[in-house]
Image (cartoon, rainbow, N blue to C red; front, top):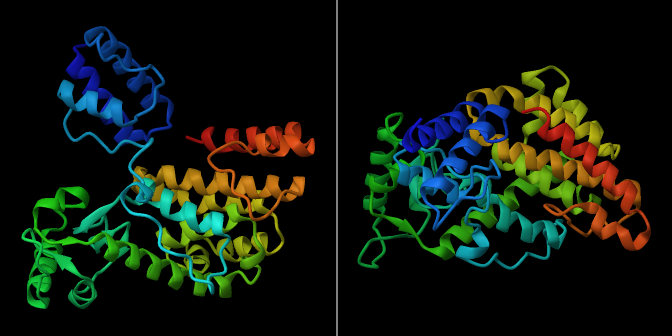
Length: 335
């Protein structure tokens, strides 16, 4: 196969199977090996990961419709700092900061309006603005630096809404020239987060005392499914959301991770792009289980690093490592 054919095969495999599946990793590895021979001055490492460098090399080689990279993407922290944490927000500071740093990895960072996979007009880091009025509540900037009028915002919103399903996600960048300011994106994300947490505190009364990793996992789920997601999960399978509530209330975070896996299976079959976020949620819940088992501080967040390193001082490194290894096998072994 030519380099172009290998690049296209890798892109198609990632899109079809998901970035962690064996066929995708094999196809990506084959392309990386061939690219290293073809471009010895800038060879790719054969790690079988569909990262930014591999994706860029595949595009250079001629792959079309290459899916997004899933490793080391831009984070919100690199675009604008996280806003100050409101004193009324019952969230561990480590979880709060990580939310703003990690969410763009799974939701993207788009200062423009776009239709998501279901046709909802969205912006920022996955913030739904599915009405002209919701869009008009934000400050949109025109290319000359002036602020768009309500009429201009509404017109742009209708252009984006009507472009679905032919145009989705980042392909919508050229539909309008209106862009959100950094301050508006930060404010929108914080408002969304505060709204989620008001509901989550009702759904999960123990939320303020949960380990930072469990708090972050719950917010990641709420961001994707809506803050009342247990009700939605009960519709997917009777009792599923109720079981999840009980698992969190009882501190059985390993069971909660298994329920997340079950709840996400159908959506993943439709949209493999959500797999990285689902894997992160499971890893965070398994970290919470290790934190509880080892008696570590609930305020600390170790993800994406191993819990075992932090537990070494307390003599629990081996147990933490075993817990984490078992959890990661359960996660990545399901692809």
